Image 1 (tube, one colour):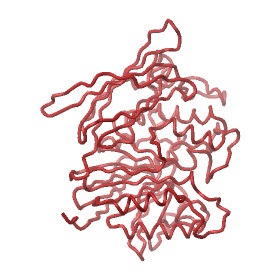
Image 2: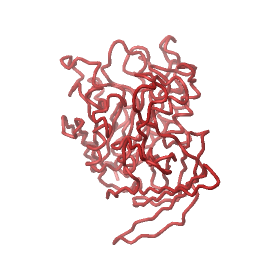
Image 3: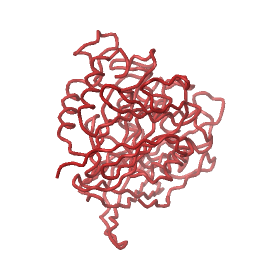
Image 4: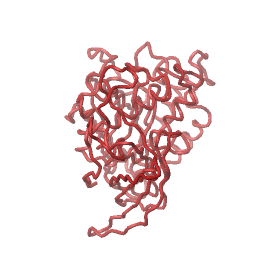
Length: 457
């Protein structure tokens, strides 16, 4: 995929960043062969402001106020020999304070395996006499159809905290490192922002939104998402608080608030659990692990669940129906582990042991299936000896965030263990799949090749 220069300014913390802008960039999400969801947030300025933090009152911080605007989109389809056909501009919608000046819309009737140039224009409606405008331009390529075998590279990350970024001015270095791989898409497995870590704690709607504003005004994050399509998953810290479950609150922030904020801040689909096909050789599953879960204190057994009855039916049916060479189950939390004894919220520990065994049995009995998980602050590759099910932990987004496991505690399940930050890249080429652990600078720290028998024609 060709990388297109950005038209939007990537200035950072400028005290002179004036004029309507897209300071939080664009997010290109939920990509299918025929559709895409475009997300934008219109802002008073074209970059975050170097202003006094309105909550702590004591130091400069990343302030990104929104501004009302009408947004228009134009798609240009790029064809062979650099020929292109323009699609007439269409209204994306009007932004406003009720949704934090965020706007997303699904665009349909796209063609598979086709590159589109996307031009967004915002016109301020904040006051009757304003004529401020902002533009931004991005590029994306739709997936091939399920019958087409084509090489694909994508990346996966988890657990990023603003205060633990490894470049104070630009953000998390993994985004610059991932961009160099030119991935077809990116999966964020959750713990995208941390409402319940470091001041100011996000116990109100305004403070929760503030975490998103500053994270995605960072230049590394913004440039990456302006260029690479993404699929988004949440976990506990970016929904409410650690180990949260339905009915919980965090200060003034309710469970319903957390869901609304999540669904306004990222490209989203009608269902919180989804599956996407990328050609003949890859299908990914993105389950939901917070909305349907039973209380932690409930006695373990067949009625205690993280996934819930409706999602289980979808998962079993869709995995059985898939003829993809490789089937990737992406989990915001561990499925195989091993996990810390103190944890009580995922399929790799005793609190949900019954469903954990059921899930591992389903995945291991589905040919070509492997697991990538988030949530853990160390990188690893584990195998269930009884079934051969393999799980790959991406590790946190920075070295400063690595914690929670003794690097000398290598268990029999571990094929690889590294208590440092980084990300995963996955390359699919026919019946060969290569999963690579990288450090934050992109250096390879571990590589695993999986093969699947050729599918019957």
